[in-house]
Amino acid sequence: MNLTGSLKTKVVIIGGGPAGLTAAIYAARALLEPIVIEGYFAGGQLTITTDVENYPGFAQPVQGPKLVSDMREQALRYGARFITQDVDSIDFSSRPFLLKTESSTIEAQSLIIATGAKAKMLGLDSETRLIGRGVSTCATCDGFFYKNKKVIVVGGGDAALEEASFLTRFADQVTIVHRRDTFRASKIMVSRAQANAKIKFAMDTVVEEILDRGQGVVSGIMLKNVKTGVQEERDCDGVFIAIGHEPNSKLFDGKLDLDPQGYIMTSAMDAKTSTAVEGVFACGDVQDPIYRQAVTAAASGCMAAIDAQHYLEYGSASSSSKRGPATESKSLLGSILGWLGKWRSPL
Ligand SMILES: Cc1cc2nc3c(=O)[nH]c(=O)nc-3n(C[C@H](O)[C@H](O)[C@H](O)COP(=O)(O)OP(=O)(O)OC[C@H]3O[C@@H](n4cnc5c(N)ncnc54)[C@H](O)[C@@H]3O)c2cc1C
Image (cartoon, rainbow, N blue to C red; front, side):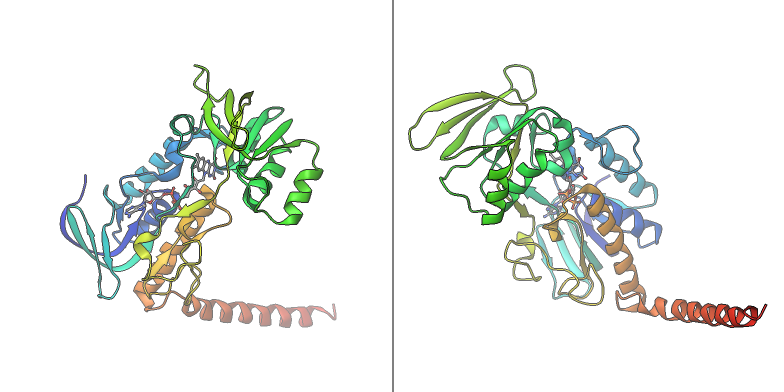
């Protein structure tokens, strides 16, 4: 059911990927009655992949869409409510915060932002059609599928060279396709790649088309040398697009602290997930330029929900109010053990 109209809640979670859904599970089980504004891209990035082999708890590969739809089901079970629209505007200056979507206005005492990120793409139809079927944007996620295969990495920055080096653990041959004659990447990364016998280079070259030759999975690539105009068709099993990522943070530009790439900066206040605005927390890929994994997104979603819960209960996201007594009881325990140790030592 899609909620509409004027609504009020303790916590609104923006985003329906692993980060937002995990935050929803925790917030719902803490009786915060979360409203999840999951956006038109409900489920997030995992909905466009097939086998996920590295999410803990699944001895067999789980399909990306199934994994997120089960997370959503789990959040629903504990009382999370959903709006399948994008947030159009947020008033960060009002208390409660005021959010608007196409058909609802929501007042929220706290906010958890989990709007994710997207990999920059080349803009080819074949690339969109074959994503998860040989086209990938994540070597950590998919490299394992390319044992003894041939892959292409597209890009010229540090990330592309790092992905290429990582892929040589699995693939027999990795070709880096770069549109210029020099790399943007650091010298050390370039030297490492050049010293790796498995890595080949196609410089001054762009991707014209990714080919499946009617098989529904990547089987080749059409390249073009930008200086000579010569086209070349090559066989390959996978194409990794490594031309950067873009966090979905435009909505927060000028309102929260963003880094130069647009990632939301967290740990601004008293907790790991807190942003520059009190009561606003961020988790998942929108604040993570490094790990970008489902499990790290989910983990930070859990942290954001706990931080929001502390903020709502104690007016601060810090758990120090809880740590005090725990530390005291630990030190009391320490004293008792110390005393016991002394008492026992003569024996
Ligand atoms: C093809 C592919 C394969 C992958 N494979 C793996 C893998 O095997 N293992 C792994 O661990 N990771 C994998 N990843 C990475 C993983 O999917 C991401 O790290 C993870 O999804 C990040 O979760 P997130 O919740 O932060 O954001 P996302 O999954 O990006 O979700 C973002 C959510 O925010 C919503 N949103 C955005 N803007 C708005 C707005 N204005 N209003 C409302 N909602 C909004 C979207 O609708 C979406 O629901 C893969 C990624 C891709 C692209």
